[in-house]
Image 1 (tube, rainbow, N blue to C red):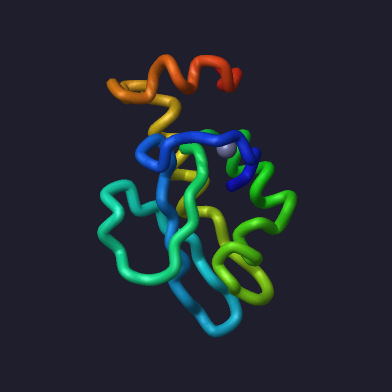
Image 2 (spheres, rainbow, N blue to C red; image 1 turned 45 degrees about the vertical axis):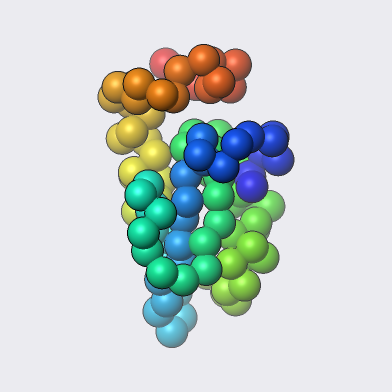
Length: 99
Ligand SMILES: [Zn+2]
């Protein structure tokens, strides 16, 4: 969703929006179990940043106003920093993750 690279949906991280009245919050949904409207992006900080910059979340999730990506950003940075993602190698190696 952020960088618009095509990827199989199982390689993407599902995120859902949980509502507040004034601020909507993005929540990572790695097991795809949460109800509600979801969007998919690469579990990659660069992809998240692109999505933010394009306001892609607001459009994809149909939420007006501010979207809080703090929880999602933390999840992504944690999961990429550990790099213990057995299935995540190979396809993500070209993305140029920060070291
Ligand atoms: Zn992406």
